[in-house]
Length: 389
Picture 1 (cartoon, rainbow, N blue to C red):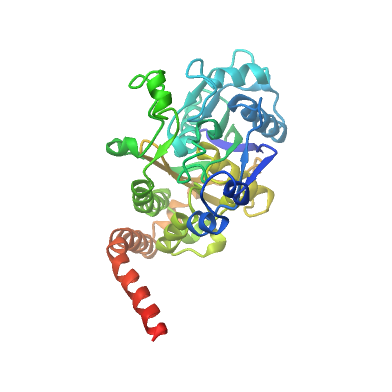
Picture 2: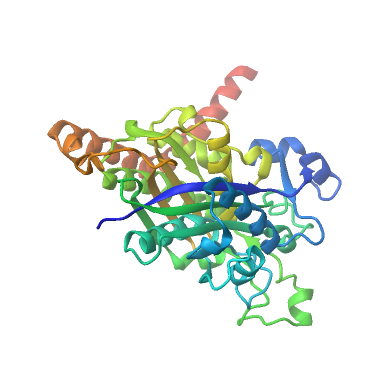
């Protein structure tokens, strides 16, 4: 028997407190215009006292279980992706399992930065495809506001809190995960890091005095990494799925910076309507970012049954992850196995050549475009000087 992992439930939770750019103007030396033009963010959600990684996870999970019509006691696996757990030990996944009432269900946390939810989705899919489990709850949650240095205007304007969850169930009909691309480059591990309170810098007065217990980011290195890997990873995973970019209904990227998203879109050669963007309302919610955008895309009718969706992200590690997922929330009456993933049709020479050419063009643009940025800057300054004359 061949099993497939179908998404049958979905839910999200965001705190009620909204922190706008105008609110931040009162806290640090910044402005709404500066934040919007550089990040695309207008506001973000901040957890209230008493709201935790666990409580937000449970709220999103309960909605997903309700959509899937599953009881917590029916769950066979729980994976929580987060980089801001309530405690280093125990795993927040065990706390979520207990709070949900999923007695005895195996549960573990997964840390892969902003790509964590995609890593978790791929991991859960493998458990189901092998027949080990019949269902799984996959959650992406962040409580980043507790680790943000509100005196550092380069980071405090970026991050927010929230949670997104999906339920996967085994299906005999072809659906679910079609291809994935996971990767890591640990040489830039310190480009996005909580330096204090771990084994290298254990809790101490010195750690507090040097503010090492707050999130630190080298924006230039992260931006450079993200603009390189996002388009390349999408090209790789779409090609691996046997599809073309025209077969993809929607791309749901990690919501870190709208400049990064727009640059990836241009390199992929897809129209704006094929990209899901909600960074303006939530900011960067790390591992919660992609599932939050996914749930909103469903609620807004951006995807329909039978669509192929691409999830793609980058994050601390530094890591990257992308996946092509077939969206079929209801069990289909019949799908010919030979049609999955439609390899026969796309194996034709013309389709293969088309995909190869597109992938090569994306790869070339990813490598050449950064070299042209100085020329773009010179051309822009030259036009300004001409206008002044």
